Image 1 (cartoon, rainbow, N blue to C red):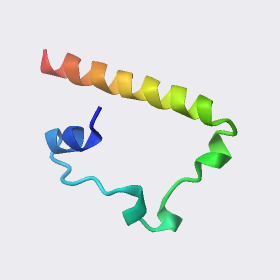
Image 2: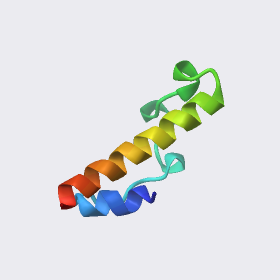
Image 3: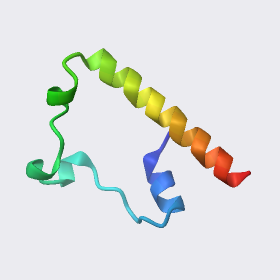
Image 4: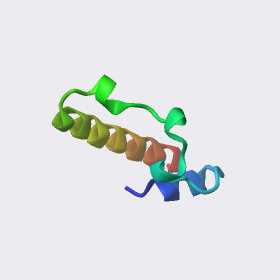
Length: 59
């Protein structure tokens, strides 16, 4: 899923890359996820929920 497309649909404008954001304004995911695989599973789950929400809104 391309999050830039979602942001444009909602009128949010351009989505900045993490490298373009000050480190002080980012989350340290290591504090939340000790295992990368768990983060990847949650990310995929969040993507699916977002897609489901968009489809539901369009119908």
